[in-house]
Length: 80
Image (cartoon, rainbow, N blue to C red; front, side, top):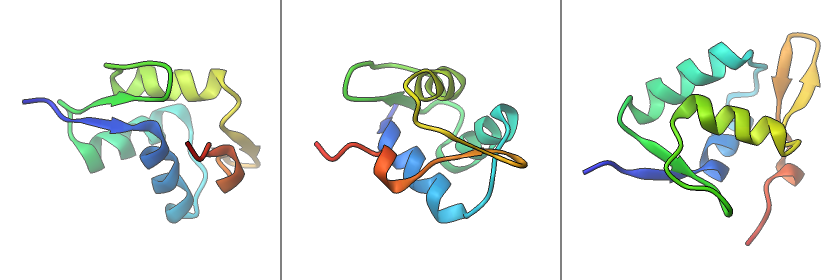
């Protein structure tokens, strides 16, 4: 059985790591934490791979650019 993790959990992981990511390093961190077979969902989309989730979150303005890549902010995580 494949588990599905909400994108909010990935954003919380980013916040707790206190580091910046590239697209590739974030995908690698997601796979390391949640596993290759995990799928991801958000409030409006389901059944995404890690790379699809990163692209989706980026398209929704959930990332903040830093000198070394990007991160996120707590206020970018919706609370519903």
